[in-house]
Amino acid sequence: MRTLLLTLTLAFALSLPLVHAQHDLTKDYIAVRALFPNYQYQIAKDWNWDDFTSGFEFEYGRHLTGPLSLAIPLKIGQVKYPIDATGKTLSAGGLFNLDALLQLRPLKPNVFFSPNLFAGLGANYEDLRSVNFALPVGIGLDFKLGGAVYFTTKGEYRIGFSDLRDNIQLGAGLKFYLGGGDDTTAGKDTDKDGIVDTEDQCPTIPGTAKAMGCPDNDDDGIANTKDACPEEAGPASTNGCPDTDNDGIINSKDQCPTEAGTAANNGCPDSDNDGIINSKDQCPNEAGPASNNGCPIRDADGDGVLDANDECPNLAGPASTKGCPDRDGDGIADKNDACPDVKGAATNRGCPDTDGDGVIDSVDKCPNQPGPASNNGCPEITQKDKETLSFAARNVQFETGSSVLKASSNAILDQVVDILKRYSDYSVRISGHTDSSGGDDLNLKLSKARAKACNDYLVSKGINAARITHDGFGETRPVGNNATPEGRALNRRTEFELYQK
Image (cartoon, rainbow, N blue to C red; front, side):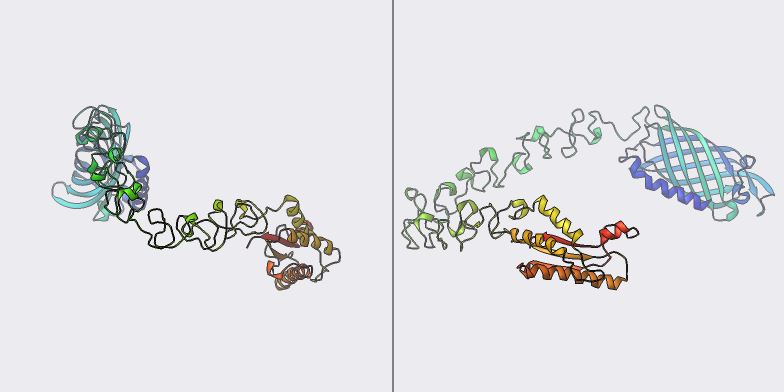
């Protein structure tokens, strides 16, 4: 019985997060129940209604926090105490229990069905003469009748400090939540925004938790009534108005909202403090007169481009690149050239694209053959060529038990050679496979040798050996059922896979 009870308790506890995510149980309650104790079950191990006696239970429940409450039940009644371990000899006596229980109530009390799980410590006064202690654990089920009134049931198993004092107690009666009506949940929520009135600064107008229950259109945590910019999110330091550059000047009054500046410059930066804001200062880090657009009148690098017009005043460069160096002479300044040492077009940020496919050579895996960027600049293998490679995988044949190519395979391999010559920037991976006939080691060696034979044939036809890799896998990678002739035929294959390095 104890094991069953602990199992039910654990299952109930694990289900609680699925039952209700919020707890609003701030009301206390009183309950009156008819009591039915049974001290014989733990001996007889048999459910016999004659072993149940009767009594009354009076309970007071005090809310603690969240779904937890403290319950103090007082029980008075008559019981049949077992005198010996056989359970056959009975002794009638009085029952007087006083318990302290911790209750877990996962559902709000204004729902139709409200379960609770409880455990605690109880004192048993037998005939008001002797006292012993027990650990009561159990489950209660409450059903709403109306308003603050519930039909309440409970069942508990009391684990006594003496085995003969283990017992079952059942109860049923009425429960009354103090405060009346359906307002037995934790606080009233007039505007139905999920924030109880006692914590809602705007209890009659729906709002957000961040704004303490008040409307907050821009969701910045500042209520509309206190937000200078209620439709644009901003920090409290600027009264709820956005200040993108965090310079203390709100965007609507900041002429440079994405660059931190000063109030004297209407929020714009002036790095050299020459009175000319950076966006209008051709030399923002060097002070100069407005007559020279904020630049000092000089040519520091001696390249013939005055510093006022020189984008690289300390590095010599031609006027065509506004005074900045251009090492490869492609008309794109090195500072803007992604390939400063190799000529290229401006459309490619100064990088070459030999095959003109829009993929620059440095990232083009096939720089000499045009292809889409989605295929790394390589030409996509046509469906016809894929079918040829698939045909070769099934039809390249060898002498039985050997890695010697049959003469009929030469024409097929010549088609593979033709494909490799047309896709000159691709490499090929040759994989040999066998069926399950024969020993594992022999099959592995045979598959490797056959892949090597195909490799040698391709090299003999002018394919660069550096473009080819080969290996064998024996019977470890079947594509068909080795239990059938057809499946074994499918498994005996030599695959040719084109790939980009």
